[in-house]
Image (tube, rainbow, N blue to C red; front, top):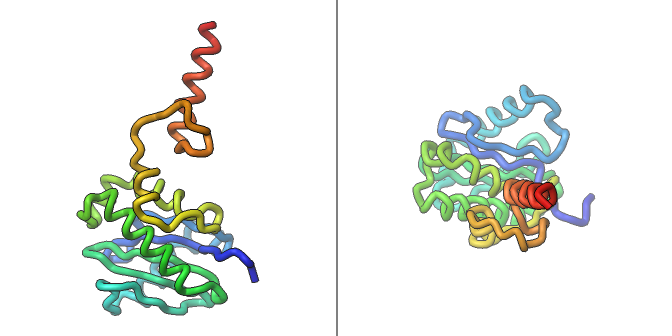
Length: 177
């Protein structure tokens, strides 16, 4: 048993069980085919529930799955059978609320696909390697939506694209000198 709570995956599926965005943090599903099969199985198990007002929790294949549905999107957070459901529910709520902020409360499949980069960055801000980093939606959304590149900011506070841009600027400056 880990001392630190861990997430096995974060899934965002459409109303037909197709992947919109997903990130797997363990090797429990080694192939893409296994990941897709797991996504379909989770969707099938949960599709008849009414998780529209608040998150629901279920056990599936020795995993705890916390999920919530909004319009035509289904949000899922999966943890091991010994994980704390409340922590997983907090991760789910942080993910959902951050996506709602980033999509300006227009949470549907079309809007999610148009802003897929923001959703994937959002997942990266919440969990890294299965370890929960952040659950505060406004903090997540502000980190993801930061459009201004502050080259004076430490690299650890920059997104990947910002860090690459900063590195490129430093390289150009050093070549011109």
